[in-house]
Image (cartoon, rainbow, N blue to C red; front, side, top):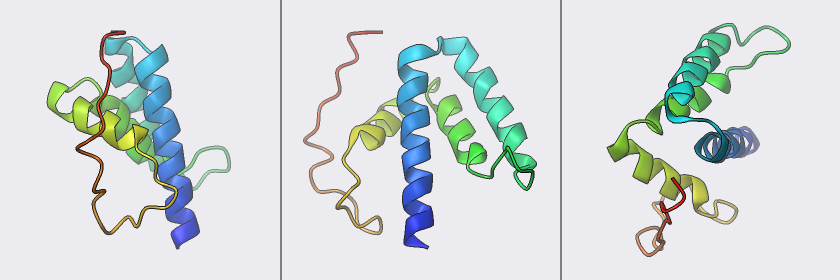
Length: 100
């Protein structure tokens, strides 16, 4: 179960960071909706259920209040963290939004 959770977190992190850097604002929501629609048929060989949270994350990038929290989470190091406990140094990390 932990391995599955780690893979899901890694997929969502990659999607969020890719979407934030390379996809324009309005297109992120469209891509997010398409990912969620693909996730609904996740039982097919090419698609997967991981697409639903990844799509939600891309849509959240267009909502200012959710964007900050999501980017903080995505840029945090999750390798040695217990996911049931909040990170103690998450509030100490700063995010540079000057490249928008």
